[in-house]
Image (tube, rainbow, N blue to C red):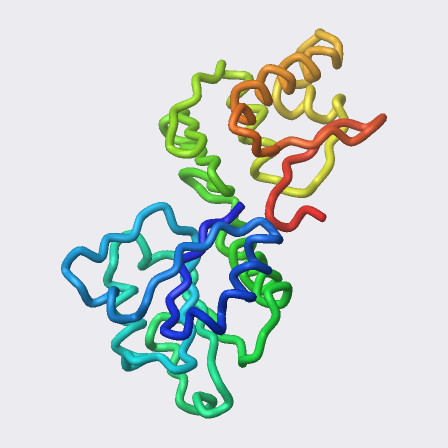
Amino acid sequence: MYRLLFITDDWDRKKPLKSELLGVGFSVTPLVSADVFTDDFAPSKIDVTVVDLERCAADPAKLCRALKRERALKDLPLVLLVTEGHLGRIDFGWGLEDYLTLPVTGKRLAERLNFLMWKLHKVEVKNGFSSGGLVIDFECYEVHVKGEPVDLTYKEFELLKFLAMHPGKGFTREVLLDRVWGYDYYGGTRTVDVHVRRLRAKIEAGGTNYIETIRNVGYKFLGPESP
């Protein structure tokens, strides 16, 4: 589930859009544009920002730049909802990643946001990996789930790292045994099942599934591009 900051000055008309987003798994934090410029504006735990420019009281350029100055938001996708009148006046120099023309359905918006989040995470990062509430630090050998540290054994970490770096791709137990344990390991494939079970118990305790069993095959990591 991704956490969405939804900035709009026309909340009554956007309530159906919020309901649709909630229905497809987003959490939505509403905010009016004026609040962005207050001294106590301090967003946290947000994955993506959406700004509705229909009937927006703030200047779009100033609003977008103010959002990008916030430490918690500057590296996150920024998406604008615009009217026909805004077309031709939108400047990507404001820091936005994308825009959609109103009216837009919750399903269409959710598809676009999921795609942007997929692009953000679809990298074989050198130092770490992030997907939803799961954060893996490759250098420090640390794993956090929703901000809480998770204690993994070395092999559990290596197994999670390998799967996470290939989101959506299924691997047989034999391949996992070879890639994680090494070709000179003489244990059986049941070792993989045991480690996956223990790994799931540790990282999926909060109810979010990160690893999926592929019946009669093996396992895969449920990244943003997974069906």
